[in-house]
Image (cartoon, rainbow, N blue to C red; front, side, top):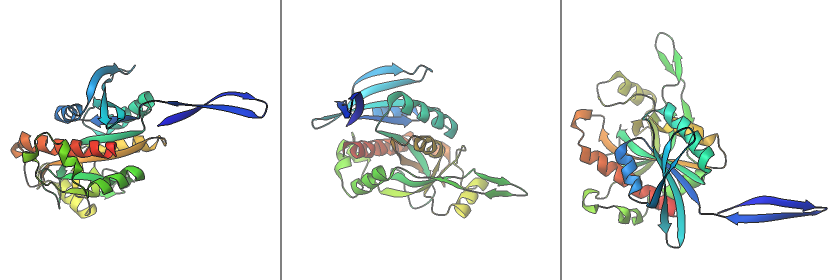
Length: 265
């Protein structure tokens, strides 16, 4: 990857120089276990602090002779914070790609441990409040090249080689499917919100509270490619208290392993 900069202009001759640096990616997470899973794929890590105070870890990810520079951060768990920090990270690092890695709760057609790469994200809290809430959904989509790369890699098994414990991650499904994103944590299958999602966003396979703000901020910066990768940590018919921490670990390990294969390719 390189970038062109003008050096000087002499009459009708424009001299251009090309300089090279390692391709750079930013990966944002919202939980400690997500952050640790991403960190485990990097080497030569060092801290870098944004002038506004956000602390990143900047490491290297080697793919054969190619080395990626990867910045990671753990961000507050809501759409608003993710949008702010996404914009901040893009301006600071000027990455080629930016990816959100985390977990989501399954609504339908998924099991714990599956991976969902969102092909579109519904901002389900957008609407008009009258006698009842009338949804006016906003939609964000990932960058086309990254979505197509993820589509290609899901047909292969290369990403399984990046799992640290393959016995706990047996043949999860990888879906390119819609997800719903808001600021609420959804865990109870009896909740009114769950019925609302199933009625108004029937093709969404999972729900979470980060991805919409992330993609909205990323798409305001046209020079960066953006993608979201979620591991399914539980289903809507399982209360949060009953979701074992192992399920969350497996989900994020799967999502992280697949993310790094997408970056590698």
